[in-house]
Length: 135
Image 1: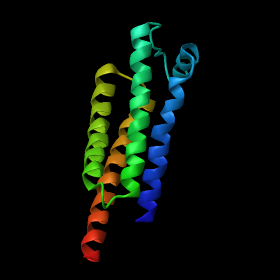
Image 2: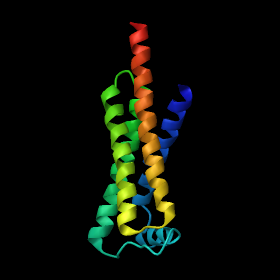
Image 3: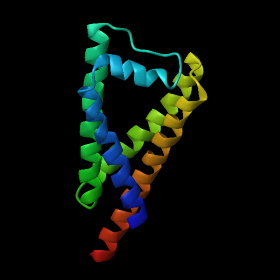
């Protein structure tokens, strides 16, 4: 039980750490993306805005997940929603990766996302079982 909780805490911290990318200069962010393949973001203000807002949203998803894991007995629905969100994102990563022909490295997103989703749902069911046993 505590192993799953710790894994979810680490995952939420890594997701929340994406806020760092909001403050990284655009050229540095593109150079970082260049390590993973020939893909780079266009130097367009609308793209920059969208990517950086997405990173900010990921930050808050990480914070929300940490709070839900911390007080699982009070945030069962949030854990369920986050679990299914990550599992569906894993499926979307597989499909989009296949459609757009991304390098194999990007399929790790699908596996990690699906795994975090499954762990969140398992952790939720364990929290529900603990709560029922306490009653």
